[in-house]
Image 1 (tube, rainbow, N blue to C red):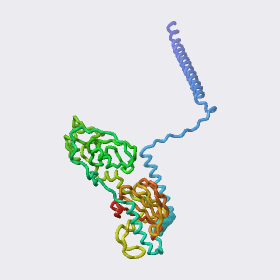
Image 2: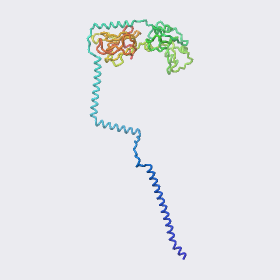
Image 3: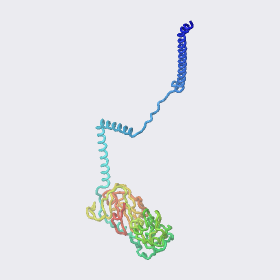
Image 4: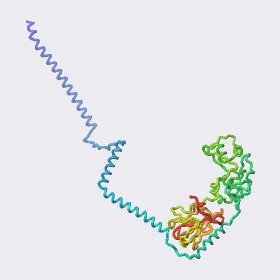
Amino acid sequence: MEIISYVQRQPKQKNTYAAIKSTLSTIKFQQQERAQKNRNKKSAVAYSFSYPSERHTFKAGAVAKTVSVKSSLVALGQFLTRCGEFIRSNFPKILLVTGIFLTVGAASYFAIHFYNYKLAHTGQIELDFSDSSDIENLDRLMSVFALEGDKDFDSDGNLLDGIAGTQIYTQPVTFETYKVKSGDTISGIAKRFGLSNISTLISINNITNVRQLAAGKKLKIPSVDGIIYKVKKGDTLGSLVKTYNVSLTNLLDVNELSTETLTVGQELFLPGVGLDKQSLKEAMGELFKMPIKSTFRWTSPYGWRIDPIQKVQKFHTGTDMACVQGTPIYASMSGRVKTASVSPVYGNYIIIDHLNGYQTLYAHMSKCLATKGQWVDQGAKIGLVGSTGYSTGPHLHFTVYKNGKMVDPMTVLSK
């Protein structure tokens, strides 16, 4: 009976276990579901707190563009494409505007040049031929300004009665100071101290214009002739000896050199050497500058020619520079204005005495700006181009005299 009762209870036990297992599964699922709901609530709260879209307005920012070669080429290609399309669609209009622009520009260019040409080529003027003698009168006047003095040095600066060749260069060079007095000349000072070349004083004292050497100026006088040389990169004693033809022994002795090593910028005294002719002429104020700095045309050279008015062969005393009326005229070299006057031939004219045997004449001015007795520096404005006197149009007549004799201006002018 007990066995039968046990067997009968067996299915009920299995059902109880299944029910318990099901209940536990349900409870676990419910717990998981509640946990998920809690997580969802927290996430919703966090989302609501981090992005409260109902309370804040978001603005879109500018997108940063990255510049690269590719993007630049693309932009250039797009621009050229648009330009090409514009030109194709408006080609007739563009062609018309370009043609009008070129036509107006060309017409203006030729009109301006024709106007300037007419200014420089006026018609023939009436002239009393008896006034042409005024040219000879002015020539004689120029000779009065150029009374030839005793020039006591040659083109190399050597004194004609100097003591060249008697100086000794085996002792160190020494210097003394001299204060220029009224009436002193560069050659006179050189003679006083036993020097034989004026280049020595010019070089040692870095004189740029001898004619402006004023009383009271202090000069440095060396014991022997020579010039100051500043060492350049690549210089050696050997190259200096060869270039300036000096003795190496003398070069070492006068400079008290104990080594043959030279440094850039070092100053050396080159015994017995003089300035080159170009530097000497510049220091002596014998380099003429162009009296016209604006555009001009050479119209009549110095020498024999057919007179443009009388139509006969005559000697032209200077050179003519044709240019627009009112063009500034500048002193070709510094000096003192000896004459600022007017004549039937030269019209308004100026003569400058350069104190070195040279005189210059500037003629046919529309206006003289410098006055008699005035000192003018090289390049100073002294007048304006005109067509006064014996002239066929606006131009400058420029004459150069050397010791009372006319010289071809082209032989002394430098740009």
